[in-house]
Image (cartoon, rainbow, N blue to C red):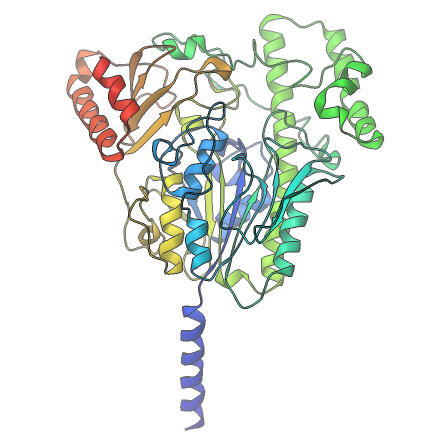
Length: 509
């Protein structure tokens, strides 16, 4: 009888625990490539805490974005809508309407405590958050400013001394400590790392400097058959700046005058001088030019990038440790993603924007004990637009009818293998880095892209035969039927998503 009572009590306790709304922690980085994460097979990256998420949960092999640029990607994450519907199409001309609905507002109305800390890049006066402490615009790596508000009260701006990833994590953990203990929570931690200009914390200097970093096969791409790729301005060789990007200044005075260094205290600045000046002196002695200089720039770019990623990864570990040490791990879903992918020298580039795989595809890692089995690989095509409805379904919150994403909770639960067979993309910005606006559709094997404005034209790639997207086969008679099918699929997606700008471009032929 006593044993039966204990069993009944245990079953009731488990049922009550199982019915608790899950906590949600989103860690979103900036410009972090899947190519530089150990869990994705990188041989040069040291990312033990990101790898930890993959080992304890799931790695998405086909996670994508809808618009490969900072603000628009976050707008899509929040709203579960494509750029044409949430109104934030590009960083240059768009203003995000915080009055519109978001998964955060829906969770808040369903009893969640909510916070966003760090980079958001969607302006100020956020709505739906109990607390936010955000970086203005792009933010700074050292001694950043924060704009903070509690319960929608007047914003307060303050500057805090230190390194941005450390400070963002400090504020996130402080909020977790201060929030109420009875309600579920959702916190978004937005890192500036690994955004240009790739500035690591002082303690991470030298960690990747002596690694043999292979040059990508496509580094000296000649862009034949791809006109839009040929006119871009994101080349490591031609467009990466020696001072601004690589910290190779002619003298200390010019270095100190740079905006990133001007805000440093003397100790921070001296540490940067002590690290970079010997590298500059050695460069001047070597007198490199042509392809040799391009290769040198690539190596320095990669070293700075990898060191900056380590500064972030360490702080991600702090968050994971906090959840474990405070008995929150079992009932908390952790999602790591970047706002988009990034070029690590592929096609000779840095930056993002194109629908080619390196920027279209983004790292996505997720863990939650009981929901996701350790070391799971999810092959389903998912997109950043699908995250909002997934969170809402997981929390038992009704998904608004106007959200365009599709929940992939059934995939996490192992009930389905896939939620969709194609993904739509639309990049609107027609300014920085001279990347032509374009839209397209991918079914995983074939990718069709329509460029417009700066460059007018079509591209079609067979990803099975040409995974590096070097050969545009649009107009090739051998691909006539594939081309017709993909054009039909593109029009169908444009109509489904009510993308009037894309529809108008197609009407022009």
